[in-house]
Image (cartoon, rainbow, N blue to C red; front, side, top):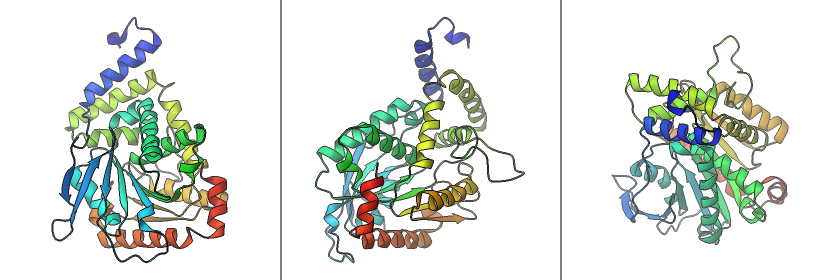
Length: 344
């Protein structure tokens, strides 16, 4: 703490952010500034074009697709995919292929650890996503969202940003469905729920789960992992007004103001960064109080943000079922009323 001695509160917080970030050895994790063509599947899939459209947003245009099962024009549907920390290009293309093989374009937003460490960065990212959607993607009429791990945090911040912004209804009303894959979730401090549904079990605070996830994304050895996780407790104590309180508001928003659109949650019992019991409890709350059309899949064993790799056929089946639900209800009168009332 002597490192920060004598600094005023604002300077103290900024110094803590720089120091903590430097210890994490945070990299930018940005995609190439140039357009890339990558194979989404080494066996038979066509090459997909990955193009930079802003500092943090990249675009994957789907090849022409002649077979489409629903009445909605696929060229008017955009998928917004917000990735987990450290996602590589070939990972992104694997998930993008779920959509591009159906003729759907994908807007990729790559999450960075600094979005969570200093929430102002996530708010700046939300503004950037909004500007891309409003100025470059305005011809799309429908948006399907797919978030992974920390991407769910950035997605929630985006929705909070849109709620605060005037005249953003034209974007909000485009949201028609969402997949939450490997949400970082727990109870207690920084948690979705105040108390864990697991009676008699020790409680791991959600904030600690998130820090653990950041550390794992950097592939540190055990000593560095322990040191950084210990440092994080000091960091969040120092920056509580700008970090912990923001997390609490974000999680309240996530819990109490879900989109009333078809929703799929994917998690597992042995994911150290997601308490499956918390997610199951949340699903019950959403169904009972907010009347959200939500389904959940909990695998007994599956690594964090790798469910598609370990359970490919079932993942694709669940994904297909959600897409069917989205596109068969998208023009129903009930869906239009719900969207008009709740998509903020």
